[in-house]
Image 1 (cartoon, rainbow, N blue to C red):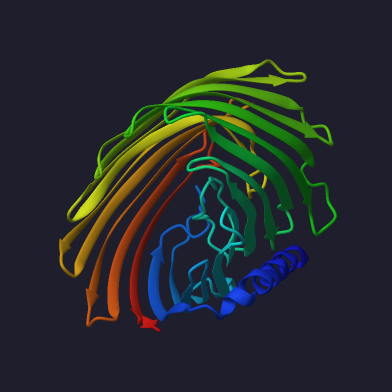
Image 2: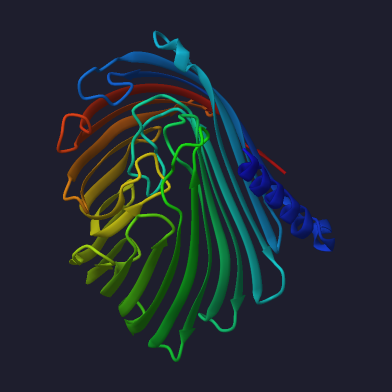
Length: 425
């Protein structure tokens, strides 16, 4: 894919430019971890169908590596893992997955920081396990997703900063009935503290989104967008902060899709009860003003309680408000949503770790169609013989799409054998 190639080329050139400057002769520390894993998955609904469920066993062999390079003023993290996938019955889906991550940081001067991150995934899994991706696919056709972020951060005080960044996300689908697309978002954010207790945050971003299809059929409408926000922050104590803010978003579509603006007001509260217990809560109200349709409005909220203890941690939270999905397998546009989640991990024995988690989310679109999604998983991981681990994971996903086509239920049982060894110099 041309766009992905360009992003990776830019990333490589930036590393050459900043990573191998004269300071590259300074002392570096290297951590290199090669690994290989073999997994066997039983999936009882390969295509997330509500009427024609097909099950199969999927074998995956994944070699990979993780490299960390650290010096006094720079750091580089690089990981890559191809996955060779074989299906027992549905062998037309055999493929090679790819997963890679690049993180690079450089202190250009005492007060100027450069950062670059890039994540890449190629997969056929219809349940995308990617942050902020709620869509699904009903085929095992492969897709590629790449997200790159480049930023410059200028520090002009102990807590004052000005950040300018550029984010680009690309999606390419082998399924010709789905849109390919790209979003480009240059943005800036300033945080300024007038004194120890009072601070101000300002931000602005511009979004350009383009969509197309390989078969030259009509894709979703391109759009431009602007976002701006202001937030006042008050520190009640070293462990307690409150905030009040306002955000404004615009969406201007090139085609027949309806333009809209969104106004959101919010308040927030953060408190650290101790180094092991923290609470974040927030709430607000939004109003969506569309060119032709009636206004949409509703409450927003977010909450997170995290407790860490000697053998593990527990987190409970939720969020709701408004969302939009355009660069996705399911182009759903503007929607209202609300949800909750909980996760727990516990070190049962020195070499045995257990975890359990779950989430619930409801999405309501402009056409009043409502989707409810439940996801949960639990598992055990046993580390043995220093370099080896064996994991058993079960996951369950259900979606009630309001009709027989969109709904599905899926169960997966996975057994993973992994081997890795750290080399440090």
